[in-house]
Length: 237
Ligand SMILES: [Zn+2]
Image 1 (tube, rainbow, N blue to C red):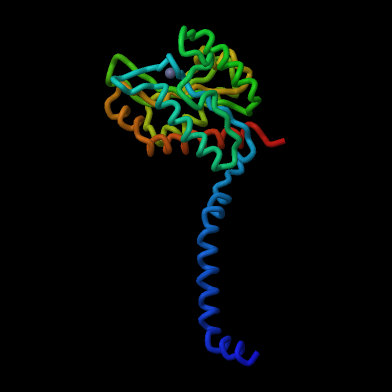
Image 2: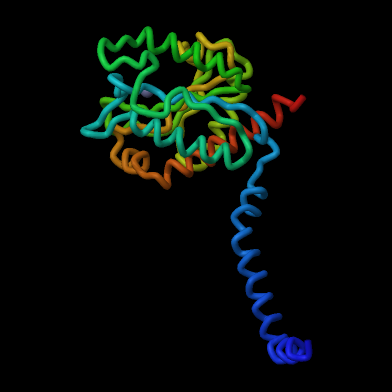
């Protein structure tokens, strides 16, 4: 006993010091968890959102050289999913790989793909959906993001306005929101918008749209737009 006391006395301070170091390291490893909790966004927490990833499989969408819209749509959609999930939303994608909704790698049918896409979106019973696309034009001077809503949808228009306002800060677009008769908007009961994130036919916008840090900026802007829309238009039950 005396021996133990003697050693405790001699090494006590060292043990104390070691204890503090261990405590410090333990707090350090807790930090990511703490940060994760503080990024929860009350506007989005627990909300179910569907991201429709435009094109896929035999349908590449707009192309420019070896740059393919379907590939970039998926990257942007994945960045958006990660951002929304970080904020507490529950997110589903219409596709998470290079395929279309028919899952066939032959006889592509736009009609079949679009029909199944609309069915899938409504089956999720999400509070809203966004369809991610990229634009292209024969004129290389065309540029800018644009958000489309279904002509007869009041909620769609409010969602489009809200997303457009946030995206404008990132893309600098001079375009306005626009009503459209796109199948994916017309054939779905879920409130939704179609987002053209920019033109891959425009030299500098193409550079941005191929860049993963730009995808993250778009994801943050779209998430903010969705959050603002939900907060003012779809109260939590
Ligand atoms: Zn497209």
